[in-house]
Length: 114
Length: 116
Image 1 (cartoon, chains in turn purple, blue):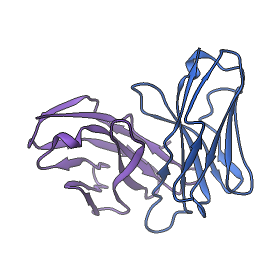
Image 2: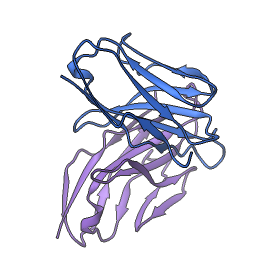
Image 3: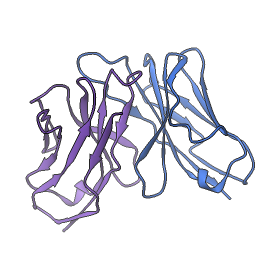
Image 4: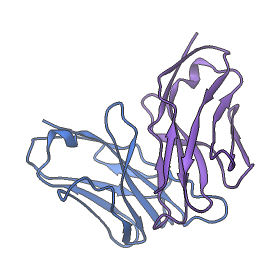
């Protein structure tokens, strides 16, 4: 079945450091890929998405490129801020999974220190 | 409505009691999902509705859990004879029927369930 694997956290960085959170997936067909973010005390919200191979999703300085050859969708940001501290979830949605179910990775908690 | 609405936002219940959690999706969204997030854990898929039917119930953890959706809108997740391990945040999400742009789902704030 479909699955999403992302790097375990927590990840602790200093402000202005470079961020990479790895995400790989297993899926049949051609899934759409997403990063969702959960800030402290808030609900999950979409950060960015990509719907086909080689697409790059971007938002708030974060980027992720849909790499079909490596089945990856790694999240990157060139210079993190304290306000980026949150839990990040990689997810995929495929129309071939008995519906249009979106499944999530386990989440990676990011702490950014001032 | 403007967003996914869930109620109650917090529920404390005694072990063995039944609880009902309600979700009102974004107007016009045909797909509805229930997830569970335990403390420090990721999102565990429970059930998915397309309209009123549930093509995927694979995530329901036991027969104490059930869900229904009526009128293609509001959904209720029912947990019977609650156990302490049921304590978690229950998240509801909805989406439009996906097209070429991918299936972005929108989450509610969640219902925090504590079983004592």
